[in-house]
Length: 104
Picture 1 (tube, rainbow, N blue to C red):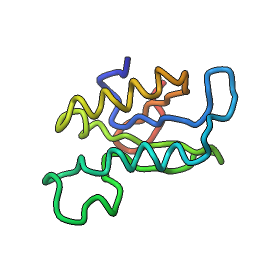
Picture 2 (cartoon, helix red, strand yellow):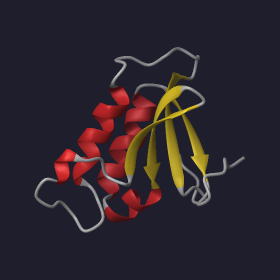
Picture 3 (cartoon, one colour):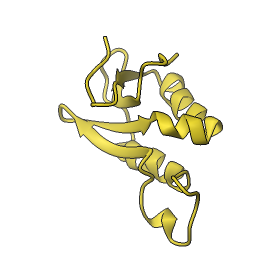
């Protein structure tokens, strides 16, 4: 469960046991599926860029996806899909505040 204080959730490409998650392009795939969920809704050509609410990135050299809480407010089922993806694949999740600082 994600705390109410979290503004962003970072899904890391590491399992809870520390193994690298495969396939290597998992972050881009997940963000690609979420590309249609964006402020203002889907527009022609919007599938060609990532949603600002779900962006592939890297953290400390580890592939990750940063999921913004605004996705939950706009599309709760899309948010649940991302959170369940992390849970179902036993991935590490980190929470961050609005300034990007880790929550403890």
